[in-house]
Image 1 (cartoon, rainbow, N blue to C red):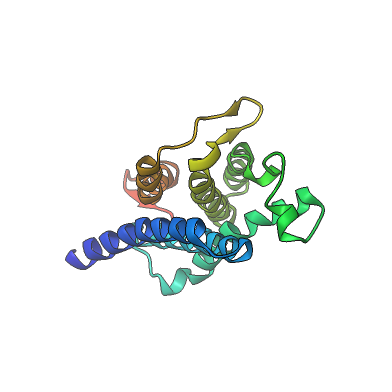
Image 2 (cartoon, helix red, strand yellow):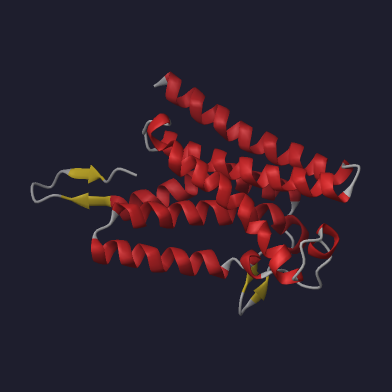
Length: 202
C-alpha cells in the first residue's frame, strides 16, 4: 500500500515539476528552435507521465503497459505538427508565427474523438478502442492545458476560455490523471449477474 502511495505521489510531483521546468525552458531558451524543442519535449513527457500515473492508479503493471504509455508520450508531442500543416511550411519561424491556432489545438476535436471511440467500443465490445479513446483524451488534454496558460482552451464553435492562471494550470496538470481515472472507472465498471463488480483491464 505504501509503495503505491509513494508511486502516485512521485508521479504527481513529477508532472508538476516537469511542467514548471518546461515553462522555464520555454521562457529562457536561447533560440526559437531551442524553445520549441524544449516545449515539445515537455508536452511529450507530461503526456507520458499522465498515462503512467493512470496505469499506476489502475494497479496495472507499467512494464505491460509501456506501449500505451509510449503512445501517449508520442501523441502529446505530435499534436504540434499541426503548426507546420497550418503554416504550409517546414520552417520553424513560419510554424511558430501563425495568425490563429492550428486545428489540433481545438479541444473540441479530442472530445469528439473520445465520444466516437467510446461509442464504437461499446458497440463492438472492444477494449482496444476503449483504451485508445482514453489515451487520445489524456494526450490532448495534457497538451492543451499547458498551452491554455497563453490563450485559454479553444472549444469550437463556442470560442475560447480565458487564459488559465498559472497555478491553476499546474494543479490541473497534476490532477488530470486522477480525473481521467475516475471517469474511466465510471465507464468500465460493470455488474455481473451475481452482482460482483469487475474492472475491465486497461
